[in-house]
Amino acid sequence: MARSALERLVVDVPDFPEPGIVFKDISPVLADHDAFTVVIGALAQSGRDDQGRVVVDKVVGMEARGFILAAPVALALGCGFVPVRKAGKLPRETHAVSYELEYGRATLELHRDAIAPGDRVLLVDDVLATGGTVAATNQLVEQCGGTPHAVSVLMELGFLDGRSKADGVPVDSLLTI
Ligand SMILES: O=P(O)(O)OC[C@H]1O[C@H](OP(=O)(O)OP(=O)(O)O)[C@H](O)[C@@H]1O
Ligand SMILES: Nc1ncnc2[nH]cnc12
Image (tube, rainbow, N blue to C red):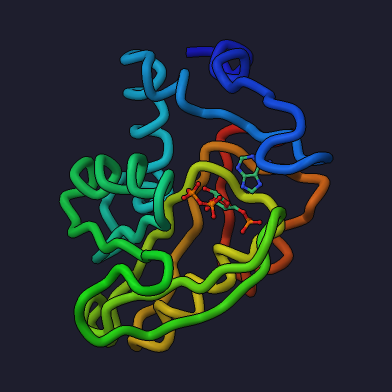
């Protein structure tokens, strides 16, 4: 599937969730089986080396849209999936990090035992905007003793320069605007 065809499936929604924000609605990508298949395969490439070997132990997805992409990426790579959730949702002992995003402030949590020391971790999300979510997730992975290997996103809002917050972790995006 051509990049332009994929891009056409992402719908711009002005002034959502608040005035001045152009919300990138990726749900039509998910609703198109061919597009969804291509996207999952492409996102999973970030967890492989040049020979196609899987080089990550876990795939982390950030609540909530990140879950939809990260879980099938984990299955495609033959890895476990680990959820990073908004505050108060995970039932056992967590690490927690607060962060800013394009439209507010939030806290993310990760079960302390979800990542083993030494695990190499692929972060998967739908949109990279300010980079607050990725920066917080990198910190959570490191607090568990893991190493963020790469960040793989469907869409990057380049004008917000979120990749500069990734602390040197490589960022792969399928679409950049
Ligand atoms: O780069 P940032 O500025 O941090 O923004 C990107 C994050 O914002 C969105 O999640 P949101 O927190 O809106 O949650 P949702 O997936 O539950 O809608 C998106 O899914 C990313 O996780
Ligand atoms: N403009 C945007 N569209 C969709 N998700 C986002 N997350 C942060 N900013 C966003």
